[in-house]
Image 1 (spheres, rainbow over the protein chains, first blue to last red):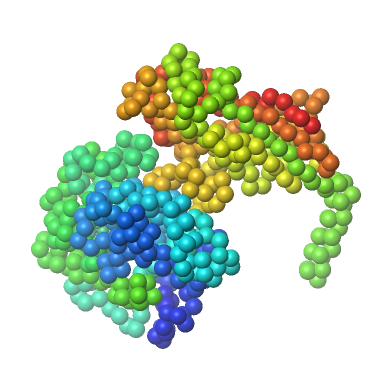
Image 2: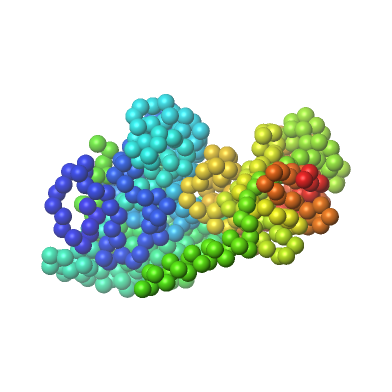
Length: 328
Length: 249
């Protein structure tokens, strides 16, 4: 179903053999399922766990509460994540997309493996507020989990490793590669940009893609784009301990950007217009401001419309609406 | 043709191997006796003194021993595969570890990592001693806590006079991976035999975290979770944490 370069007939999820295919316009992935063989049963278990609210302290929050499919697996309308007991987290929830190509996770790159990425949310008092012992004990005593683990791993044993590996069978196949942009790049079915989109693409390549590099629309580096003179969140330096990393955050992907509002690590902007106005006139001279942004990025009204038209070609409805990833 | 060559090569290799070394394997035990500067380590109740004369108590003391390597006098080295152990002062069964499938022979040196090697800090979900469930994995900054010490000291300026020393981190300049290595008296080497289970007895001094290279005052340092202060502690315990006391062959 992620055969981005192929046309496949509609098949129901039950019959689909879950496969991880590298789209022809993407490089080789970092995560390749070598130590976590992808199977339909493993994927089904991982998906069920992803949407299982009983895992959280007050049984109200699942991974899917913060990572919502219709919002590109981020949390719609929440500046910062919203977890158990109505607690507000510190950062905007990042989308879960094309994670198999990422070498580091979180806004500050503190987490180094996709398999261990859910741990912080599981234990954070403000997110799911629980721990692995509690989750493992709950799953052992809740049907149909022992059965599902048996199908996925060959024996009904439930441990934290199996929980994390199966969740990864779900999160790592969340590949978005069927946007209009991708189809144009792959020259699929003669898809072409409109003249406005094309003008936007050219502007984007000139002004934005040094950081938001194709095909992931991030070069995975950590930078400051001048949101504040002094950042309230340390960002990357929290991990490296290096002063010159203070206030830097991972360049975010722009895939499905139409649906992933609000924007930036603290979710301060609700619209793309606000984001573009920031680059045009709002850049603050933070101490670690990226040198490329010293003079801002001047954008006329017409240019902004063109860039926005291009950014909307990054929307992948086949991904956003793929029932294979949906809760039910 | 190529396949045939390979097969021949394989079997001849195996044969000569068999002739040279009798590949029998056996077991030995490592026992870790937790102490503080010569006194038995008793959690929660006993009071100890650091090199600065400040009193302290210990509530948690846990550490990783991994990648255990044995050497023979002729220089051959045997790395015990998948050797990862978490010793926890609150769980007496964790202080005695059994190493199986070790080639028999006389070993004159033992070496191991205090903590966890670089690769496993960034690897995918682990199980056993490395299970994140053991409370020794940082969830916001991937990596293991190599040595976890928590306690109290009247001199600590932290809330409730707590002491929190979570030592870990593998990236320069704050890499805290340290290796312990000790020669074994050639007169009484570690004799691994099929009919015997030798026992190596180590003394572990929790007090070594706070002295050795830099005497730590709890008034000044009472909290670290990785970073440069963790390096100070790791440099302290690199030499003083473990001592091979004796071997029962």
